[in-house]
Every structure is written in structure tokens, then in C-alpha cells.
Length: 169
Image 1: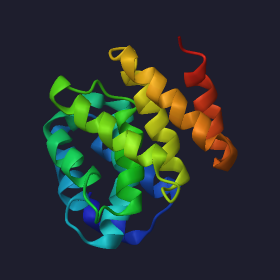
Image 2: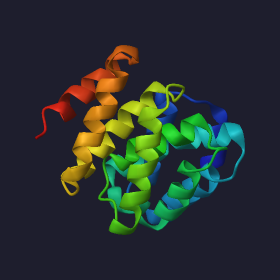
Image 3: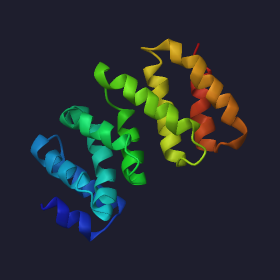
Image 4: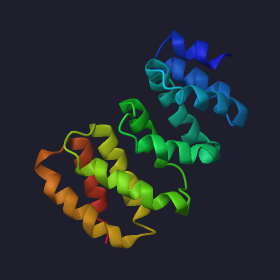
């Protein structure tokens, strides 16, 4: 399978599933997908983002060599919304190395505080921060303060995840 050709064919769940199945746990095939994801071509980045997040959910170890590049893109002003959404989504499923935890927390805090940020990015960011709060319980008060300040303006997706975090002590 030529992943780029497949990505250009369409952007459907069936297409995503075919690519994810083809990649499986193969690092070389995942590497091909990641090169396309980071190519900068708008449509390809968008279409590669979806199977990328599913591949990582199924095989978290695949993302290890790409974490720095993902963090750099996540912090970039020019990040495509689909790229941000799917990078934050996959960070819900992986063990984040200590060297990236601070950067990721800062980025996720920025996302949940930004009224203009996409709903999914905010919801996934809450989950990532909730996960990181197990190692860094001192961030819980800040998360709770932001949740309370944003409560009236946020969507059901945000509120659903926020309720889970508010239950943590």
C-alpha cells in the first residue's frame, strides 16, 4: 500500500481503518505516515492525523521517536487544527517522558484557557492534564480554577471531562 495515495483517495472512517490496519505495529510504515503528517501539505496533514492517532492508541510505542517533533508542532502558531486535535488526542494514550511533561502541561493549560480553541482540543487537553495530575497533584487546583472560570462558557464535551477531574482530590 502507498499511504500517500490512500490518503489522497479520501477522508473516511473506512479509509482511516484501512491505513491503521496496514500500519499495524510496524515502525517503518508508521514512519511513512509520520513523514506525510509532517509534510506541511494541508490536506495530507489533515488526512494523516486521524489514522496517526488510532495507530498510537493501538500501539503507543510507535510514537516515541516522534514525540519531540509533535511537541514542537503542538506549540507552533501554524499548527493545523486537525494536527493539534490528533496530537493532543494521542497524548491521552501514551506515557509521556518526563522531559516533555512540563511543556505539555503548559501547552494544555493554554488550550483550556483559550476561549477560541477548538472544543476537541480543549476536551483532550483536560484529559491529558487529568492524567498528568497523578504525577503532579499540585496542578489540580489550577485546573479546577480554570474549569470553574470557564464553566458557563464551555461545551458539554468540556464539562463532561471537567466533572471527572473535579472529582479528583
